[in-house]
Each structure stands twice: as C-alpha cells, then as structure tokens.
Image 1 (cartoon, rainbow, N blue to C red):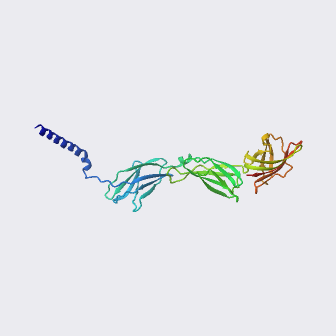
Image 2: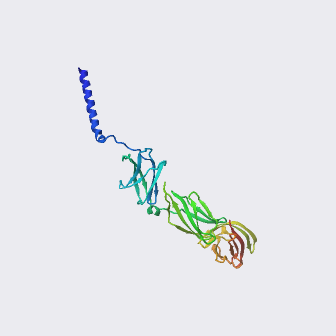
Image 3: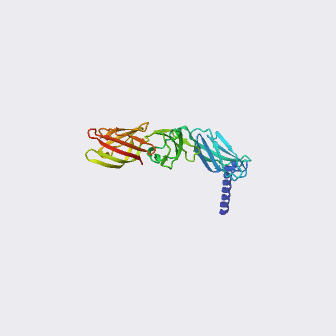
Length: 327
C-alpha cells in the first residue's frame, strides 16, 4: 500500500513539473516553433574618414534574401544583398560622425525570419584625429650622393612620409618615404628647404590621414668634408693639412668649421657661399682675424668643394691654402 501511495505522489509531481515547463515556453510556441536563419560570421569593421567598411562572410543558408546592418540603436540601417558565389561581402557606410559605433548585423530569409544579431564595435575617424597626427622627425645632412634625410622612429600607424623639394630643374618634386626606411637620399635636390607630411592609416583602416605640413629649412653646405692643403707658418715653415672637417649649421646661409688644422686650439671660421659662388670667410672662436685677399676663395658645385686661400694674425700672417671637399 505504501509503495502505491509513493508511486502516485511521484506521478503527480511529474505532471505538475511538466505543466510548469509548458507554461514557461507556451508564449514562445503560440505561433509555432521559431525558425532562425543562418547568421553572418567573421565580422570585420574597417575604419575610414567619416565612414566604416563592414565586411562579413555570408551564411550558407540558401533562403536568405538580405542582410541588414543597424547602428545608432537601430535608428539607422543599410541593406546588403547576397551575392552568389561570393563568400565575403563588403559595404561602406558613409556620412558618419567621428565617433565609435555599435553595429548589429542580421540575416533575413524569404519568409521574413530574422537571425540572431551579430554585434561588432568600430570607429569612424575625422578631423579631430587628423589634427593630432605628428610629422615624422628628420635631421638633414649633405653628402656627395645628395641630400641625406635621417628620420626618427615612425609613430604607430605611420605608413609613409611625403617629402617635397626643389629639383635641379627648379621644379617641385615629391617622394614618398616608407615608415620602414630610416635614411633616404635625394640625389637631385637644389633648394634650401623641404616640406614634409606624414601619412597614417588606422588599424584595419581604409583611408589615409595626414599630419600638418612641416617646412624644414637647412644649410645646403652642412656636412662631413675632407680637407687637404698647406699651412704656411712664417717661422716654422710649411706643414701639410690632411684631415676631416665637419661643417655645422650656424644659419641657413652660414656654416662653421675649424680654421686650417687648428681646431684643437679653438680657432674656427665661418663660411658663406655668395650668389656668385665666392666665399666669405669670417673669424669665429679664438681666431683673432682673417685676411682673405690672398684668394680666390670660391665654391665649386660640380665637385662640392671649397677652395680657400686666407691668413690670420695680420702682424705675422699664417697663410692657409686648402681644398675642402664634401665626403
């Protein structure tokens, strides 16, 4: 008897439980079993200038007739139609404000059924982002091969730097230096300034953004040189000059180096190449005076060399004859 009563109680419990489960799911089954089409996959968002490219793989569900992309809490949307044989679909959403967005993508089948949504966050860039970009730093020097640009380390997302200069024909030329290149030589430069503008592409981006143009002037004669010649001393006789010299920039027109072979004594001179290629020599450092009437003193652009004949110490002139050639 006890066993029969226990069995009856178990059956009542099962029936009650099933009734509760049926009540739980009943609202969802009122219109029959719900069918969800296959949803898109492998969603990628590619940032651009006030736009975003949405890329995804089509579902294999043959009943799908369109995909809908929503944003702004579904206030805005765009429809993408399936393309037979194309695994990946891409569409660009233009006219976006510069901000982050949450996109929802769903598949719709021919019966109007909607798939579960796929969510993805992305960002559209614009003038604010671009205003914060910095031009890649560069130091400029002269070599026999041409104008040498030594770039600093490239910032994140920097892809290249555009360099505009004046070529030998007097025309503006532009070269694009990749961010992976640290040293670049312009062989046909003629001017005394360059313009630089760095280009950036955000991660997975589809558009290029540019830093503000930076104008950098330089002295066309600064660089590393080799000096050869003779130092004439009134009491000690002649000695040979054969040494390296560094021409440092004082201004865009004037460079400075050691006088003769007396750099260790602080004797310096400043050189300026004039329009007619004559060279004006001015004392600097410990040098008391310079007399350059011995001349001629001139610059040869064909060989990139200075030809100088000058003296210092007027009472007992120390004469220096040297040719200083760019290395």
